[in-house]
Image 1: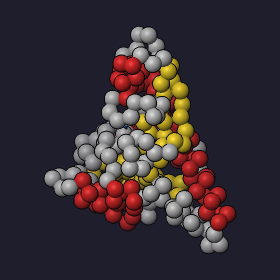
Image 2: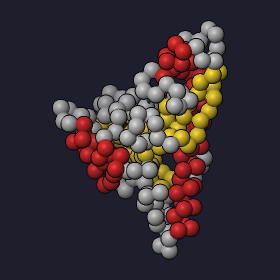
Image 3: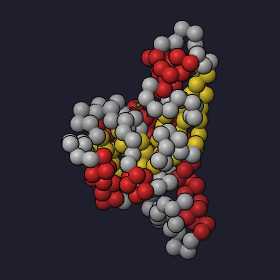
Image 4: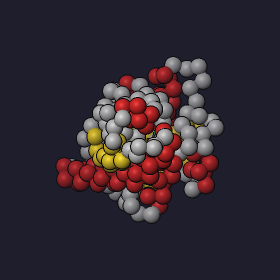
Length: 211
Ligand code: GAR
């Protein structure tokens, strides 16, 4: 793993959102409650000024930033986000309902240190409207996945998954709500697991406790 995590301090999480932010809240509350140990949520970044999640982050005393694209190229927009994350010495980036694909520059800057949560059992139903795709296919089970982000669309290495049943009378909304409940459990577990492994690797492989 190419990450730089200093075990002498708490890991610094940066969470990217575009909307409601319920997974961001689940992560922030898990950090606060000690279920993600030795970590802090240092910043929440939204690409949408009206994202409802921004107020929820502020209520929790977390710094928020709105970084909109505003006519710039994808790379320029992502570069500003990367600079904001670097300025805050972010160790791990968590996409939480962030509805943009990351540019190559972003992925290179934080390779192996960006996680995403997706509302299906990947590799089934990547991309938009995963719950609708599941209903249209008639699957009886779906779920959610936390994975590392790479250049592929929802195709990076899988960290954890949770299975959710599809009921015969499900609508997109009822299925999404059932999956979301599991997402809120799964994402904190996955972040804790990744941080634990980064820290173990860091402690085991270097004298100055850095990788
Ligand atoms: C969540 O269901 C998340 O898995 C999904 O958007 C929702 C965001 O909700 N993400 C994707 O579909 C990414 N491809 P939230 O803003 O309340 O966390």
